[in-house]
Length: 361
Image 1 (tube, helix red, strand yellow):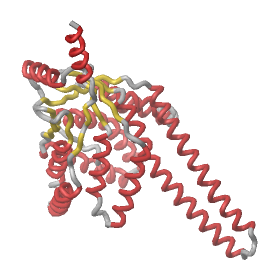
Image 2 (cartoon, rainbow, N blue to C red):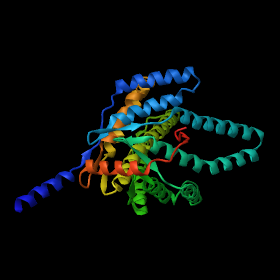
Image 3 (cartoon, rainbow, N blue to C red):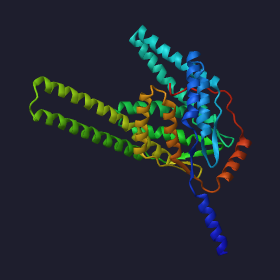
Image 4 (cartoon, one colour):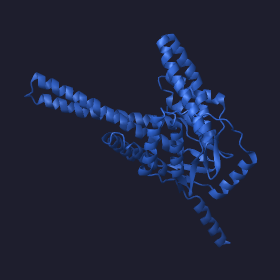
């Protein structure tokens, strides 16, 4: 009896062992895909960009795996092209409207703001429905009325409060996205609180402010020391001042650039450490120092290679983000997949016509 309990305990511990996500993509492989996509998109005046997105997405999905299986992407390039045509039409209308009159332009902006939540809704449906793992598709069940509340009402409130409600709006968006997403018939859940988002935003603000103060004191002290040392003419003092101001602005710009990977790291960890699929818990342990190093070295390499390092940079960033994640299963993941597959086979899918509006545009 004791042996049976011991074996059962060991089995339970094995089932609780985190399963690390892995990423097998390489810069050289992706460079070939990227350069062909770029050239064909230029030759076809952008029409091929929809097919390019499918090739790119398939590569990243197939390169991402967990528990020995990779993800798959099933996007239809025609649906993506429809979304991009809509985006181009909106841009043309926007530019023409302001040439006609300021009032017409303002009305067009309002119309686009009212249309945007619907486009986001269609994009979320498209992206999740065309993603699968072990043959089971993801899905998005959010209603259009909730979409307008989350993606229109809350952003307006954040703007009206001078961004004081921005963390609240951000939390509501992520909660809506995750809780309305599903894997087969199994739903995700999200437990991140509004308070945790405010803490993340506050921490990033404190780090940013401390950096700005440190830069100001360092450069201001250097300039003061140069002037106090004497021996400088009025012209030389002016030149030194201009140089210090230029260096100060450049340093602030670099510091602002470093804040983004810090913010992205905190938010990814916050979101995925509070996300479950049924009782299966996700984890993310990204380090902001590592992410900042990747971001800085990537931008330097991109500049030095006149942009040719871009696909390698994307692979480096994606590999770190993916491999920082893990999934702790509650029981056997194989049993969960099998049960989910059976539920999906019984219910079927009702999505027939989809439109992808590429939010990156």
